[in-house]
Amino acid sequence: MQEESVRSPSYTVPCDDYVHVVEFSPFSSGTSASLLAYGGNQFVVVATCLFQEEDMEVEGVEFNVLRAFHHDLRVDALAWSPESRLDRIPTLRLCTAAADRKLRLLTSDLQDRHEVEVMEGHTSYINHLVFEPTEGKQIASVSDDHTCRVWDLDGRKPTIFRLRSPGVSVCWHPEEVFKLMVAEKKGTIRFYDLATHQAILSLDCGPIASADWCFSNPIKVGAVSGNDWLIWDITRSSYPQEKRPAHRDKAHLFRWSRANDNLFATTGCPGKISSQLLIHHLGHPQPVTVGFATVGSCLSWHRTLPLCVVGCDRKLCFWMTEM
Image (tube, rainbow, N blue to C red; front, side):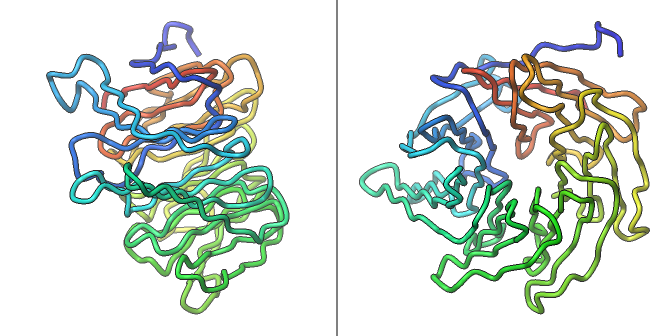
């Protein structure tokens, strides 16, 4: 890979601490700005972002912090509820996972109401979580304890799916809310019917570090395994349609763009001084963008722009990609 293809971030935003996880809300905030949350060692910061590509009067990025939630432990995973909106009655709702194996549901009206509800049940590290995307009344989480749990926020006991290895990723179908995708570390991606609690489809490959279900085109599933990225068309085969090497130091995360179903990003393993970000387009043999982030460890795409963010040591780094 040629060094001249390496690009600096399009925008950076300073933070008070190391950023362990960052997530754009995949849902409309009801305003022109997007909601973004990031988690550090003892806090969750919620902000709005507006980029010059969305508003010509903005220089670069307009980043406004709305609220910081105190968080007893380092934030390891984070997910947005579709109930989070800033029009009408402002509501922030998100869920976090931490090393004490608990989920924390954070809710705020940005005035007097700031609630934290703790949910217990997992017996090992929680790797990923997601809200049901239409009403936000359920949360799914996967853990090293070989379970996927679907938590009902109306207080009913969680539904538990037993896995054959640690769960690494969980995704909800954007429209068919009874369909859930769970990726297991040993190399199986299963799709579950939440009405019957049965697996309805499975995909196979080598050990999986991360997987994602394409939000804008749900026949596409992507994952990283070893150094490679893999893409499935689930209407055609249980084996990948495409597989290519990506990162020399093993791949860590796979995330589809929400703006373009041919665009996706992968990151190299964190823990080194510099983590590699690669942005790929299915029509191009080589990555269309190569970036590096200082000990970067997380990845999220903007809801409507071909722009992704990586959390780093005391900053957020944003890369805008040409379509």
